[in-house]
Amino acid sequence: MPSSPARLAGIAAGTAARAAAGLPRYEQATIDELGTPLAEVTFVVVDLETTGGSPKDSAITEVGAVKVRGGVVLGEFQTLVDPGCAIPPYISVLTGITTTMVAAAPRIGAVLPAFLEFARGAVLVAHNAPFDLGFLKAACAESAVPWPAFASVDTAVLARRLLTRDEVPNCKLATLAPFFRTATEPCHRALADARATVDVLHGLFERLGPLGITSLEELTGLTRQVDPDRLRKRHLADGVPSGPGVYVFRGPRDEPLYVGTSSDLRSRVRSYFTAGEQRSRITEMVALAQRVDTISCAHDLEAAVRELRLIAEQKPRYNRRSRFPERALWVRLTDEPFPRLSVVRRVRPGAGVFLGPFPDRRAADAAVAAIHESLPLRQCTGRISLRVLGTACALAGMGRCGAPCTGAQSVDEYAGIAAVLRAAVASDPDALIAPLLSRVDRLAAEERYEDAAVLRDRVAVLVRAVRRRQRLASLAAVPELVLARPGFDGGWQLSVVRRGRLVAAGCAPQGSSVRATLEGLLATAETPLGPDDELAASVDETELVLRWMEKPGTRLVQVSGTLACPAPGTGGYSAFLDRVDAGRTGRDPFADGRSLGTRARPERISPGPRGHSGAPAARLASPA
Image 1 (cartoon, rainbow, N blue to C red):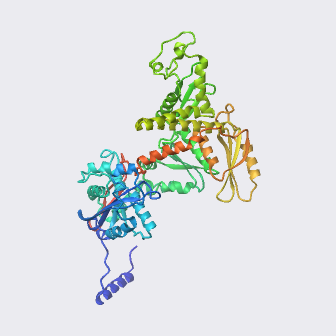
Image 2 (spheres, rainbow, N blue to C red):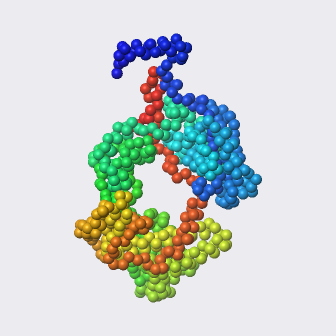
Image 3 (cartoon, one colour):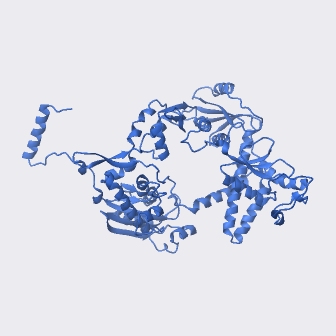
């Protein structure tokens, strides 16, 4: 809006008065003067070695840092740290740091003041910054040392924005170091990794110059920029209601692109149009979306079930999970005089014993291999005739098959072996699992650790499959089940389940009659089809119901039939499964759980229109 003559005269008079008084004049800053040039910023690149992956139960063993400005190294900081506990052997193998090495080292409380002084006034840089900064902040909190308000840069995220999949397959430091030809090779020692990260940072800076990113403010805002095309689609969330439910992004031909669920639909849908959403697939999906449909639900269980059903029915291409429930695999013990194991995709009542489901062929084959390790079931695929005898195979010679094809094993003798598997699936897996665990212990005692680990993992897959099958069967046998959970508004969330299928859902607000609400739900509930004692829903839906039922605070209002788990079941193997899970976590305690893969079509920063100073303004270019 143009200024009035009086206003212009006032500004001129004020400027003249300041000049007469010897005060500096007000001047318009140029675009170049609004930011801190990267060449003038002091960066402290830091790396830590620790005893584990979480500051809650692990401690720092080494700190390494490099101070750099304008491409020149100004100083280095390195010290071992006494974690106050023994360093696990697998950590010592990974880092080379042993308990003896840190015995005379200072504790982290004595190291922090020196490090914070070294880094004072600088911008902290780390590869996977949440890991390193998380440990440093936790150490400061434990030592009652205030954590300064450092600006930070994560080279892993920066690389994800600037590099493509054609250049590097991922953004791990071990991958980026050879790509940028760092002078120091990362080796899980703090100072060496920090030096390598400095070279990676400088290599990434070379990518920023041609794109017009020259200031610290532009660098720190790089990962928070939003595609302008995405911003222009924020209106798609205008009519979305609050509360739990399901949302469906639809494309140009009204086809479903993506189905999701949330306890607050409006907040979740709006998040797709902000800088917080960085998934490349979702970025592409939002670019295609033309509208968002929503289905309001009574509570989170109904929303999750509706999401599963919509994904299975419409198979939106940007959903990865639960698109093809029909592809789940089962291990079947065939129904014949000499039954065998086979991997199938369909469960047919009366066609034998079924174990599973399994997410992929590898898991199914692992369970089959474990069963064959425990039981001498035949592994040939043909049907054995009771009248025409055949010849024995190599497995019979090794004692892993009773050779029923040769008549060496009768139908009754073979049935006793198959009965062990039937009993394991139905109620008691001890006769099937106990020999396998004994063999794992024997292999470990013989120092055949790799063989023991392979067999242990197979047993874990088998135990989980048996547990899953028994849990599903327990709910499939219940004709009707009514569950209630306390709601956030003081009311009750109600669910009616029949043979594992959610058939009605509702809420009884605070002060209303729960019984009256429940009577209305029962009167309008869906009646599932199919035979009794068989699941009336997909496995994923039934497991959603089981998890909701097992949450603390859930109450069983009424039940028809018997709701019970078989005894003794798989409860006795919970400690074994926990040890297996803990072993897997300990294999790579420093693994970065974030998605740091490069993008096939990354959002690129390109020079925008030039400002008054002639400098290019950075902007985020949309993918072609």
